[in-house]
Image (tube, rainbow, N blue to C red; front, side, top):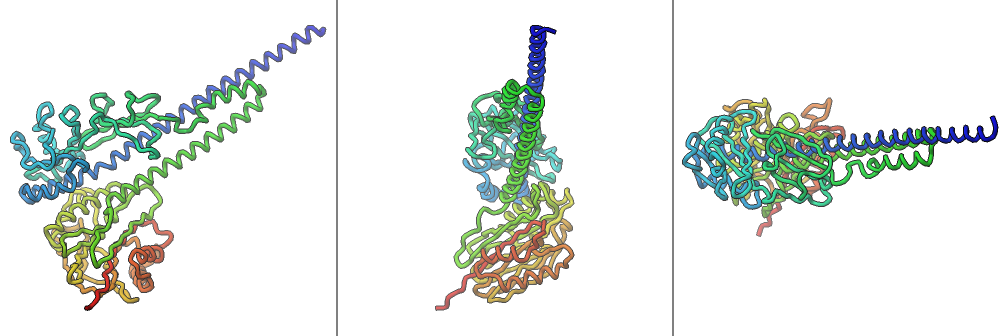
Length: 534
């Protein structure tokens, strides 16, 4: 072969190498683009399910006040004064509802018998309110007992909720929550959802005329999106989200172009393979980091929901120091049934409540919220020994087979005296002048076992400067240890605890509860000031 033929052959090899390099570069660019798009779609689906889970978790917060309202209406014969006083806690321009009304079962044409807040828009819907109220009445004690209806063509855009209670009574309650007038809701900067666009529709399809709210002015949502439909009472919610920026970051989006550039410069197969392995490792690390972030957000949502079910702050009372703490023991995203409450009943009385519902998760939290709301209402009328038996008949406990222990401490703010009633709960600990003891009283059955249970209240005088701590069993229980050993460990710790109430509770939580404990713990305490004799 002459030199000219050898040169032509060499040139052919150059073209072969360039062709092979181009094929490898094109193939790698396509694969990396498909992977980035697939990962983006997967993350979009995860975020849409996360938003749907948050909306589902809000359902007990809607059903609980309506259930209490129905119970109040049936108990008082729809007394306007008592119902209006109850509704003040939930109805207002900046509150959960803008309207709450009571309707007499079977007599829907005559309108509501009581209205709190603005007039209801439900009668203005096509067909009127009667068919909706009649359907809600038939859902008594059903799994989807809460009737949900979007009032999107009324004078003021609202969502209506109708609840007839767990048992057929004489009344049902309808409440309406206002929606943004133009459906737009601004996402706070830096929030967990600031990087996505969200649109929520009522129903099973994203129809424009069924839009409840959106976090962007551009509709339909721009770019790729994911859709999740969830049951919401008697209705459904459809959640559609799209990303404002790539959820994986800019690198996966730009990866096909990077592969093309490096593939054109480095035509050797080994270099292309090395780059592919390195980029694959980066994608795997980015996905792992994203999964950790999503898990952290889910746990944060669960903790926020748990704390939302607890009091915002202790009441301020002259001569008393009040403090409480809730600590989640489990590392997962489930919420528990431990709670505490401090209810100011009058200028003379304060009710301190600590309780523990069996189990974990949304059911336990819903039962806990129902119990807490029921006690807040019942304590305004009856003493603990009278209202505790009625709590065993609550649907959220009876249908799920759950039980709850409850400790009620009625504090006389003038006489410096407490009356204690226990429904299967541990006794409170009294700490005074370096000594500590339990205020033992007769222990009745836990809530949820027998509606005919009887409870005994016993009174105790409290010395000046003493502290009283009520707690759940997560504080003292340890694996392989008896309950008496845990109680003695707590009593001994109380004798060495600091005098300041908040410091005492924090110190006792650290000292008494085991480091391996996975049980939730709630502690609520009160400390009396030392009176000065003149």
